[in-house]
Amino acid sequence: MNEENKHTQNDNRRWIIMTAVFIATFMTSVEVTIVTTALPSIISELHGLAYQSWIMSAYLLTTAITTPIYGKLADTLGRRNVFQWGVIVFTLGSLLSGLSPSILILILSRAIQGIGAGAVMPLTFTIIADNFSFKQRANILAFNNTAWGLSALVGPLIGGFLVDHLSWHWVFFVNVPLGVLVALMVWLGYHEQIARNPHLMIDWWGIAWLAICLVALLIAIQFLDNVPWLALGLLIIAAISFARLVHQERRFVDPLMSPKMFRSKTFTIQIVTAMILSGVLIGYQVYFPIWLQSLYRVSATGAGLVVTSSSIMWLVASFTVGTLIAKFVPKWIATSLILVLLVGYVSLIFAGQSFPVWAFYVIAMINGVGMGIIISMNTVLSQHLVPTNMVGSATSILTLGRSLGQTVMSGIYGAILTLAIRLQLPDGMRFSQVNAVISAKQTTTAVSRAVVDPIILTSLHMVFLVVVIMLLIVLVINLLDPNKKIVK
Image (cartoon, rainbow, N blue to C red; front, side, top):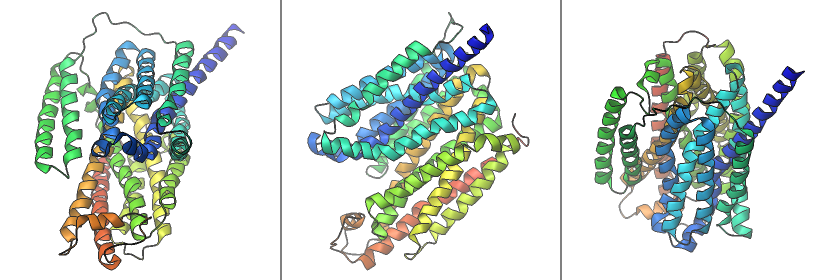
């Protein structure tokens, strides 16, 4: 009976932890969708048009920098302490963002939010790995993905309601009670046994080179289109810093990102696959709605449903991952789905102005299925293929890869679209005139749609040509995976 009570108590404790993880996942993921809805109001009230891109970039930058650092600390100091710290800092950043009287203070507060999110986002996956077996993990990750899917569905609705009926400040305040609730649940219900290391060595040079590399890379992406010479200089700094980081990690006793993990080719392939596919993901999330609004005059709401349909299929498909990896070799699961994705994107390269609207929704749903299975599989395998004492680091590296894939490719896609439009402009037509018609609300135009539409269509073809190239690269990478057995 005592043994039974102990088992029940452990189950109850485990589900308290999972509830906290679920809420934390929702809290950090809804932050993106809810804030984008409030951006016009924030920019208007704080007179921040010149700095508006930094409202999102500051959050993303500090998240990316701190993610691998927290992953390493979680392996040495314990998940509970680092996760608790992240939740508290994220909540404080949310409060300060809501109280911000100026655009610069808001950007600083968003950076503080990102410092907290850098701990919360990867550790939700790590905590799941700690509390559930390899066979259970895929289904639990799928369950946790519903928090992400829920945020994608309700985030814009909540954001619109709060801005319309209260003010933009409340899109930040709404996360404060959630953060307090998660912090209390972790404090009261999450207990872990960790072996304290009295000789803990912190890889300060590794942290420094990583920070310089990521800051230079992400700021370079911001300037890629407007100040290309500055972007090139920053990319050179990023490359040098990356080389120094690799050198530092190879010689340091307890490195921030252990090279031992990357000795497994299958592990490395999981990280690279998640990074590239995250870049593909941002492509259709941003450019499907632009295509539908600018060329088909579909409403913003109707165009947004493309992304929603993909999110729903992602959630549904992620519940099949546990069954699939128990029956099939991972490389064949990935390559089969990537080939299906390729068919959809190749059709977009040749799509004319009569390409059916419904096809975009079909391609988006196929994307949801493919991404939901492959990226969930990448997460499960990357945790399984490393020693227990490196699970936190492995998860944070995968999370960092996904963030970088989306950030870098969003900048590259934007630069390609802008460049393609500029190269096609006929004499007498300005870029601003094309920019003005990329909106479903535009009813009167100063230029002929017969001239503008082909320019926009060809430019979108160029964007999706890059997507096809990326899918071909990730297909080859997965075919090179040396593992030919079912992972158990």
